[in-house]
Image (cartoon, rainbow, N blue to C red; front, side):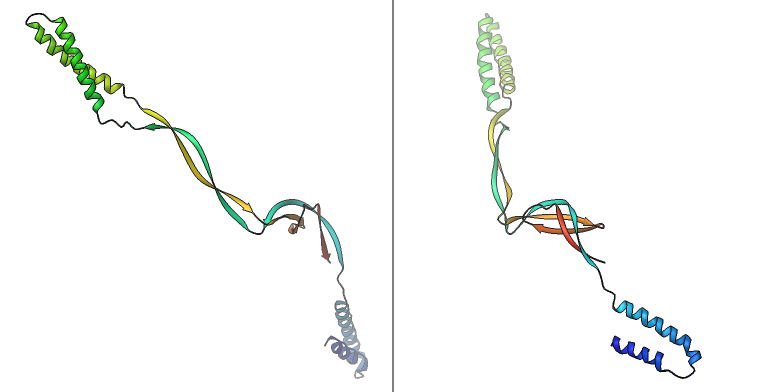
Amino acid sequence: MTVSLINVLLFKMCYNSEKKEKNVMKRHLYLSCLCLFASALYAESFTFQEDVRVSNSQREYHGSSTSVPYQECWDEQVEVPSSSSGNEGTVGAIIGGVAGGVLGHQVGGGTGKTAATIGGAVVGTMVGKNVAENNSGPTYKTQRRCTTRYEERNDGAPLFRNTAYYKNQPIVKYSDRPLDYIRINVTV
């Protein structure tokens, strides 16, 4: 199609015999257009190779990857809640009451002996109960705790993702080893 257009322009330019003087301008215009069109038609691009320095190489795995579970365990001191149902205070009160009654009986004499025994038993009961309740502090024990974690495992072969930049455009090439340069084709 372009060849036929060129032939038409040449025919008009060379074989137009009417008013040759007025057609000189047209002829120059046709010739200029023809030269411009022909130079654009036959212009070729120029291609060369250039090595671009790699700025980053990252190891990646291509293939299948799986999450493998494993347990991570440790020992921890934990407070054990008191399993008592309030019996320590009762037992302490009974022991304190008996001890107070015996001491009151030893101290008192005559008719005051009964009053001293009762007073010693009451005071002993209160003291015994308080001592028993205050002595039952928190209890600790070692407890084993575990949690499940996951580890990624790759079955594929490792590849390196090499990244370089040419005129602020990233260029990526995969290889089996880190590269220093990536060769590119530049067309001008």
